Length: 124
Image 1 (cartoon, one colour):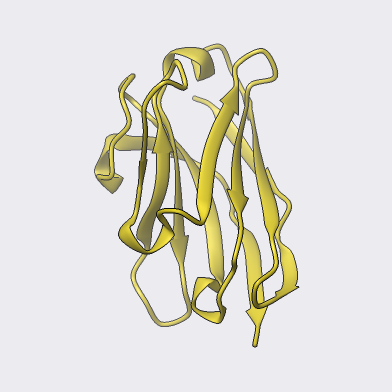
Image 2 (cartoon, helix red, strand yellow; image 1 turned 180 degrees about the vertical axis):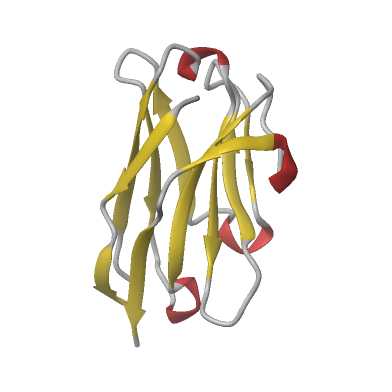
């Protein structure tokens, strides 16, 4: 099992930026796709972004395209989510997750390990 620890959340004004990090323990990180999901108050968890094991393939939720960028550093066992042009509707708890596969997926059930989440609040 891989342990995932997110960091980088906080309070930011609309239009601002944040960079989330997810540090992983365990030897399977570099061979696993990784993803970010988020859950806003009163809403279901939704897909944000994912990246393949090599970093060469990425995918994004529709409302994140052009604003968010996912990346990874396998040497550091860390995946990042750069979030720009933040909007109040981006307010949520953001979760990092490890897929059982090598290629990115938007399907929540493809992910076996989850972090505790980091809260992002965007003020208007």
